[in-house]
Image (cartoon, rainbow, N blue to C red):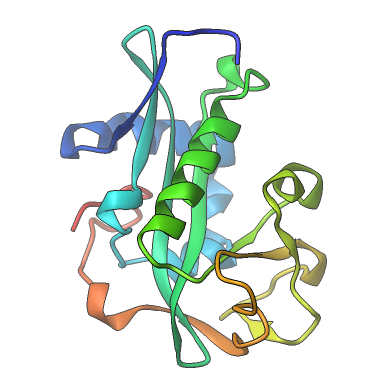
Length: 182
């Protein structure tokens, strides 16, 4: 990381507009059609795992995790979105946000994290490809991009079936908002 002035904080309500703008810039309008977005749609993220990255007092990134069930198994999370302002990519800020979020998820007793992403990036955190056909998302996903990280040994083997946002955390968000609060 290039700056000692990088700070990770819990997301607060006032961060939402800047985070939505970052998501729009990073992922474009097509983000609303992506399967991972569809899983998260209308479901608030886990507040204690919604983190923001600040550099010299400016918000430059954020990460969220959504609670899931996978084939009825609970204590799983969907990582995403992870976003860093384009001007600050490649400086380790996304890595720091992901590392902190994963560490907090493990400490809070979550068992498994899944995501749709690139193995070369997420493999450094211990993510591995999900065995083909073991976990299903409610929409098309390139099987090579469906990744999982066991926070508890054996958690991936016990997770099979359809991914659904955890009903206990459902709450309506503003339509087409990437970043909404419980």
